Image (cartoon, rainbow, N blue to C red; front, side, top):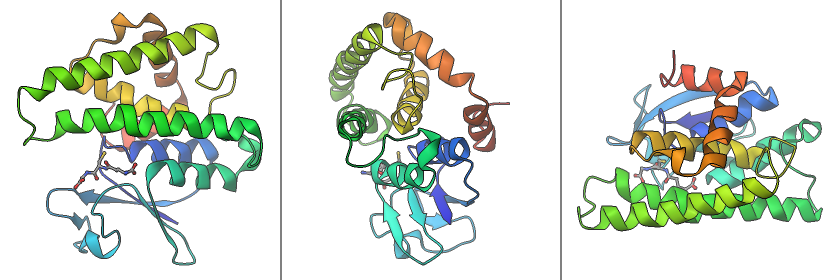
Amino acid sequence: MKLYFAPGACSLSPHIVLREAGIDAELEQVDLRTKKTKNGTDYTLINPKGQVPTLVLDNGQVLTEGPAIVQYLADQKPDSGLAPHSGTFERYRLQEWLNFICSEVHKTFGALFQPTTPEDYKPIAKDTLARRFAYVDQQLSRGGPYLMGSQFTVADAYMCVMCTWAGFMKIDLVQWPNVKTYAERLSQRPKIQEALREEGLAK
Ligand SMILES: N[C@@H](CCC(=O)N[C@@H](CS)C(=O)NCC(=O)O)C(=O)O
């Protein structure tokens, strides 16, 4: 299978999951500005949305949308613990987290990365993000050390990317001590370090 990614983008989440699951996959970089892949292919022919991540399976199926991709990958290695088994209540809990991260955190950050976002909107987006991180902080204070409790799951891979983006946007996680400790814990995971190195985000 092949994962299309852009360094440091949300595609880092399935990249981490591939490594945590021990799945061998080819990675191809996409230039999100020109919509060309590293080998010069028009990326919109692969994913008409022009967004990363995209997973292309060996049978030719194309899967887009990060939360769907990470669950697909986790289900290839059901004993990895990366996702609770389908049909269990815990699986819906995982989906609750993935949806929260996608729609409430990821997409709010998205506006800050967009050069066309009016300056006036940026403090509003940062204020929304502060409330979202405060929620994560509160949840971690009640359980942890991971979002789903004792087990690292694909939701943590996704949230790890959001913590990285907080750094890019100079949002200091120290305001949310549980999130800060959590982000540090994630950054110690060897597979996360490997993925960050591969994308040029760490030495
Ligand atoms: N709904 C998609 C959104 C993916 C997304 O926002 N990707 C960004 C990078 S983090 C992107 O490709 N942006 C370029 C664009 O929208 O043209 C998902 O959850 O996978």
